Length: 457
Image (cartoon, rainbow, N blue to C red; front, side, top):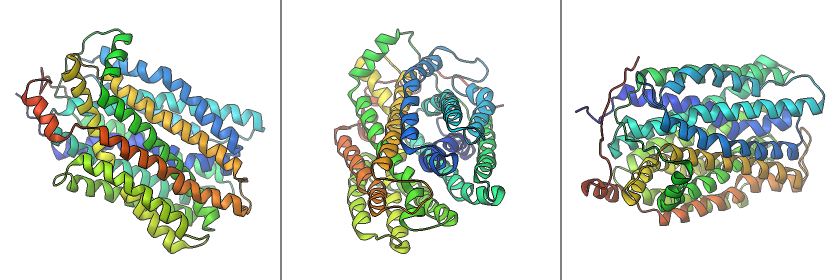
């Protein structure tokens, strides 16, 4: 019987996969809106429509990818790892193309933005759904899953740190007056790093657990998921939390540039402050959940985000660098205390569905969560574009007091409302470690199931 204990190297390798994923996630959350309006040259409203329209593709590709991972398995490499090997290079290339600005007229550039953003979306789905599903077969031990997710989210924030701290600075250093060229080269470097991290994840992880996958029609899988009340709660949590996170993260560069009056270095420093706080939150969350209920941490941290958001809006005046940096650090730290808990909870909600309904739906469950995350990203991007337009924002000019107030609201109170909703939703979530272990003790879920060992080659 193979041990369910993960080695440190395997946890690092698992984390490297999320580092690759977050080359895209971090750019989409933190810099792509700013890139499209202030560098690429899109109108904010057109950008918002782009973000929302692209999510319609996810309604098709996400469930299809989830079903594919359920139905196909490589005898040599396992069910999920082969995608990292075969799709890492196309994934990196798509990121490079998204940050390429052709010297065309506005209409042609808009078409290019749609084509490359859609390509990134498809490639992102193709590697992300296998990746977020991987934790369910690395180990059957919930504490090891939580620990692995701590590593995962730590490395995710390292990727965010690189994107926020290095990309704006390298864009200036490598592009000079041609910032479009600078962003292309800087994000090309990040894309190459993402490719290498996926290959490292493939080489260092092992799929230990093989859950029996029943060949169920799509409609039946959907019906089973709709009966899984805990999975539905996580879908709502994912959607509302992503809305808040992306709205705040997308506007952070605008806040640093226009509300605080900073240059590219200040933008980089402000974004990096949030990422450093999030990295520390990953470490703190792993430590706190060893001593305190992880579900309670999730609930109360997100309610606290709402309070801190109100303080940030009313306490910081335009140009008030010191207080803005301090409160943004605090806000970013508290926001991300929940993250390791959420991503380990998905696998447990899948097990809960098996215990409740007697049938297991895994691939579509993870694909559904991915869809709600990207739906939140799309809606948030649309909201950002529409709000910027509504507040009277214009790229690369001095902003009106109304636009500045709007940018401040979009960094603080508006996303804070969504985090409060997320925290309140978690009061209906009941799969604590104690509850999960009781299900296992009663034999209601697979513990380790039939096992197989794949070659980590």
